[in-house]
Image (cartoon, rainbow, N blue to C red):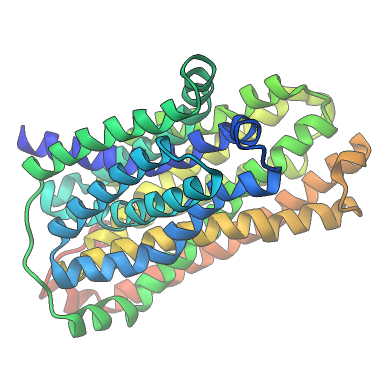
Length: 415
């Protein structure tokens, strides 16, 4: 029972940072009206949070290993919760942005260290399932934000979204304080050796960034295709886009069980292959198929990403040295943040270059459809690179297998 409560605590600390991103995005129009701010100024409510997470995630992981993961993790939850309350009480936009940056710092600690506790909470043969559960929690946070935020803002005002997060943060702190194990301080030199000189880990992190880049491109390019090529209104676009996070939420736990059954390498390749198939389908997508034709490949890409993420996270954290799990968890979280940035910038650039104009809203339906095809043909090529890296990583693991068997068994050895 204690292990279940520990997993509940970890799931909540993964859900809250995702919820903090998605729910605040919905509040932007209300904040612009309340504070008399421009769109660019209000965007810093989201950007300040994301910048803090990206800048501090790896630092938080190393500090957790060096000073004690449980202590820093609890401090991160307290910071996140206190800054959420400060957001609700902010009298001006500048104060709100500063509080959001503080909230992001707390979220960075939570994201960096949450997965580090999995190996100490569940048996090795169940780590895949646990990672799948955490992936589900993250997807639920992303999917829950828009409808919850919209309802709260319409009925109770924009402050209520941060008050709800404050309450959930208090619950997360109580669960974590009572049920998570403590860990001794680890020597910093060992962390550097274990985390920064492991080429298999570097391969895993690179694969994670590539796969996340392609996933993020569905959220960046999708709205323009649905609007410009299919002519959908904003409400229907939102409903179609919600399909991705919903599929991810439903796929996470089953994906983790597949990892436990088949091993990390096979399920990594399986997930990446599914993503490639979905990208190829979108690259060949005729607009005449409408919403069903678009949703089919999106469902395949999202479900396959959930499969990949459970496998890759399990491979990374199972093979992490006990003294460096916080740092490893931190760089894994950072690899995903890099993917989010690349998916927004690089794949967005591919889309606009393929359309031949930076003003996508003025492009015709055929032009937008062609730009989508080029973007996801590029996505398929990116995933092909990720598959090649996965096979290369497995080759390294096999060459090192005899020595590895003398120390600690790894999940990849079951592949």
